[in-house]
Length: 195
View (cartoon, rainbow, N blue to C red):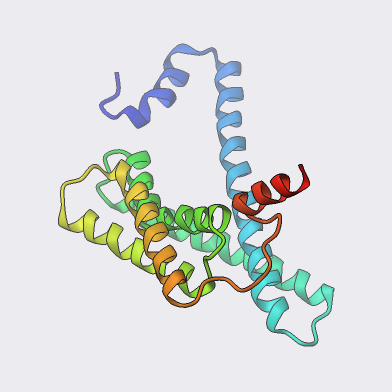
C-alpha cells in the first residue's frame, strides 16, 4: 500500500485494473478535474467582466468584453498552473486538508454575509463589509494563535461575520430599502399578509 492516502486511488488503478479500464478511469479523473477548473475560471472571468469592468466602463462593446473575458480566463489558467507548481514544492502531507484550511481561512466569512442577506432585514453594506473583514480576522487569529481544528475555521468566520455584521448594521442605521420578498423574514411577512 502507498504511504500517503492521496496516492491510494492511483495505486489501485495501476496495480489492480486492466489496461483499458485503467485508461478510462484516468481519463475520467482528468475530465472531472478539468470540469471543475474550467467552470471556476469561466465564473471568475465573467464576474470580473460583468461586475467590475462592465459597471465602470461607459463605452464598451460586447466584442471587447468577450476578448477581455478570454484573456482573463487565459491569465487565470496561467496563475493556476503557477500556483500548482509552487504548491508542489511544499511539504504538504494531505492536499485536501491544506485546501480545507485555506478555504476555511478565506471562505468562512462569505457564509456569514449570505446568512445576513437571507435572514435579516436590517443588514446594510457597511455591516456586511465590516462583518466580512472581522470574520476573516477572527479566523486568521484562531488559525495562527490556537490549536483549534481547521474544520472549525469556517464556522468561526461565519458566526463572527454574522454577529458583527448585524450589530454594525444596527449601529449604522440598518437597511432603508424595501426588501419585500427578498429575505426569509419578508417572505414570511408577505405570506402572513396574504393569508
